[in-house]
Image 1: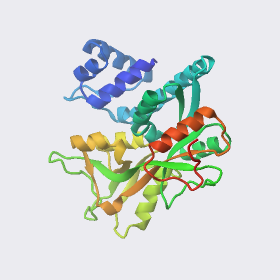
Image 2: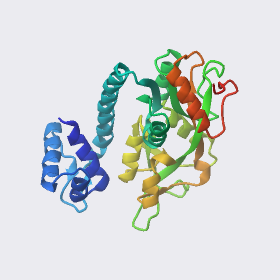
Image 3: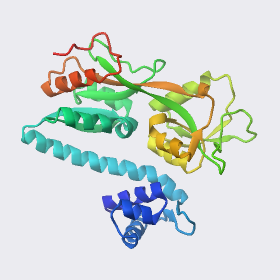
Image 4: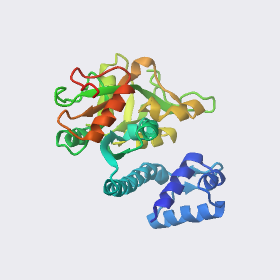
Length: 314
């Protein structure tokens, strides 16, 4: 199995068109088709239903889409790690940055582009983590900075004296569903449905899963959800929602394009949504010059919030 096969598959899953995916991947359509077939042969399963137009994912394809993205993330992370070692050897300052999965794809890319433009001598070695692993890495000194979501009712328990933070922005966790021919949500938290609503859920214990459970428990309305799928990452929940398998909660930044294209719609009143703060944490004991410089740069671009013990710029 080759990484490019996974990239081909994800492009086709996104466009649902062999011709568009081939164009995006700089391939002929026949070459793309052969590579998709090779991936299916390697997996021993059909991923694409070619009998309809536009093509669509099979049920196996829908399930594999999130896994393919996760595999590629691991490959890219390994490449980034190897490249970071080369940078160190060349005398380039490297900052270790742990980032929760969703923000790695929605928030971080633009920040890193600005970082490259303004602090080109500092390079970020990025590791995708869940919140418990990110906290552990920060506490044990295995990362310089930790970028994560924060909710006031489900706070990350870090001593602000030892681990100051900056608020870099906000996001919103919203219920969404695929749309019907009229552009309306197929599934909706209205309390009027006679049938249980298939619920694309986060795995128990995950941060976003805990936020969703809090919303459900605190609601005065009944929602009639039936948990039919669960995953650790928002990308997997998103794939299932977009494919029309049910209703799920996603950060607005994660589903912004699909909302604009009207392939998904908000599936409930604003009472079913909640704001999320985007925070970056550091250890006050970290003496890395590169981390200090990046922290000062982040502070200039923060949205105004900071822990009382957040270090002043030097």
